[in-house]
Every structure is written in C-alpha cells, then in structure tokens.
Length: 151
Ligand code: DAT
Ligand code: MG
Image 1: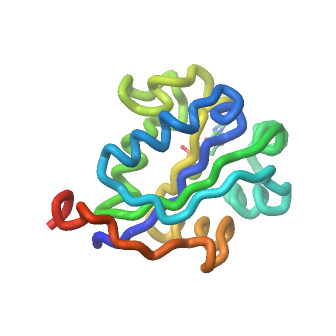
Image 2: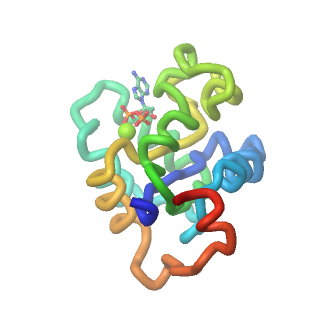
C-alpha cells in the first residue's frame, strides 16, 4: 500500500500564477515521495486521452483550449493512500465548493480554472501515469524517512 502512486498536474493557470512551488511543498510536507516530474506543453492528443470521459461535455472544447494555453507541470507522487489523500488535498472540482485548506479552496474561484489535476482512483492513476510518463522517467528511490511517516 505504501507504493501507491498518483498523477498530479499543475495546470496552465497554476504555472502562470507561479504556484508550482507551493503545490509541490504541500505534497512534500504531507509525507509523500516525488518519483516523477516534468514540464511540457501538453499535446492535444494526449489531453484527449487524459480527458477521454469528458469528450461529450459542452465544456470540453474550452477545457482543451485552457489545457493547451501554456505549459503544465506533471508529477507522480507515491505513498500510503496517496490517491485518496491527494484528492482531499486538491479539493472539490468546483472551487466554489472546495474547502479552505485545499489547493483549489485556497488558490481558485472558478471550475474552468482550478489550478491542479489529481487522479481520482488507483486504476485511473495507473492509466494516467502510463499516458504522461514512460517508465524511465519514474525514479525508484528510498526516502530516508519512509519508516517514520508510514508503518
Ligand atoms: P476533477 O479535475 O476534479 O477530477 P473532472 O474529472 O470531473 O474533475 O473534470 C476535469 C476537469 O474538467 C476539471 O478539473 C475542470 C473541468 N470541468 C469539469 N466540470 C466543468 C464544468 N462544469 N465547466 C467547466 N469546466 C469543467
Ligand atoms: Mg477527473
């Protein structure tokens, strides 16, 4: 269970607003381990696979436009229960409903500009990690406090 992984991405609005450092800091201080990190301008075909379940939504064209408007910072974080915990740290999809203390609840106001992505299930995380990263880009390393933060 300690090796569960999830995909977290700082979306173009988060990069533009220079929130990357603060977002990384939240995951580090919570106790998770960074195992992959890169910045890229996401190609449209990658985004269409990433958001394959939303292609029929009315907002989908705007979503693609926003997600290709600038670079994203994509990360893989590892640790106990990281998928569920990071969804809580990110907050509700609609920032108007996101609790203060969450990334969206602290840094955003509108659903179309909600700063960050987090995988919503373990299976979804595995799919998204394979989509955004190749195996060589994910680093297996031992964090010295592993046995301190997790049994
Ligand atoms: P989440 O990102 O919380 O997993 P989702 O997978 O349902 O949410 O949707 C993906 C993204 O699509 C979401 O982060 C922002 C955008 N989106 C969702 N609902 C929207 C809406 N009603 N209007 C505009 N954008 C929306
Ligand atoms: Mg989602």
